[in-house]
Length: 332
Image (cartoon, rainbow, N blue to C red; front, side, top):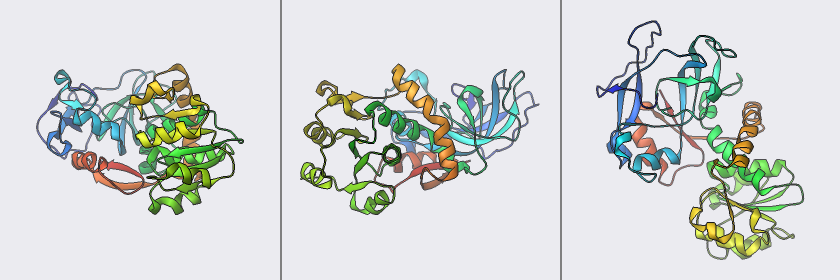
């Protein structure tokens, strides 16, 4: 629904008649850049009839991610020509209508979508290349927050080349990306040390990691955590502490991979953001496995908070503060 014309009239409308000439759906947009609680608005947006290769998805849950908040805050740029700006990138729902000559999807099928620009809406028109079938065992709330963090975590583990002979430190191991990276690295056979607040240590132990508290003295605590040398590091937080400690412990800087420390590129670490050919390949290859593993319970994910779609601005604001472990989701 990105870029669609819309009305400024607030609405609670949740119906969709695909045969009507002028169909509307509920959408959240940013009318300016700044505090999400002040600049987001629920509007009615015109929903086009799906074309070939497209479907209409009735959303059941929507993933809320830090990148969504950063865009609204203006941290990713303040292009005023993009306003009002649709928000969101991932969702789970049910196919409501199918465009002509569109194969592989049918009305009533459960799906997970990523990337879906403008996902903060109760109905969206989506290209089928952005959709994946959702098993019955995978509920919408967990599915909606799975793929953005999941493919990012998979990319870091693949880029670092984590294997059975490795001792890997994962900075931010209890975060949404970190907790999946921990599980993927453990599954690869590596010894995994994860930095986290003490409140999350028991959870990380359950996932197979050795938890270590971040802060002063981190280098010594990491060395004491395992007998062997640290061979790789994955940074999901972007702090100087995470990078400095990794540089101190890991001899091969090409095996220090970060998704956040873009100001430290000169140190020779590897930064991944999904833009390179290898990064895109790693992420694409991970999708099916993430969905099937989340469905059968072998990949553990958590939902930290649920908000009505109308409270999207508050969800974005809360996400940028300290919050419980797990993902935030919106419920239309």
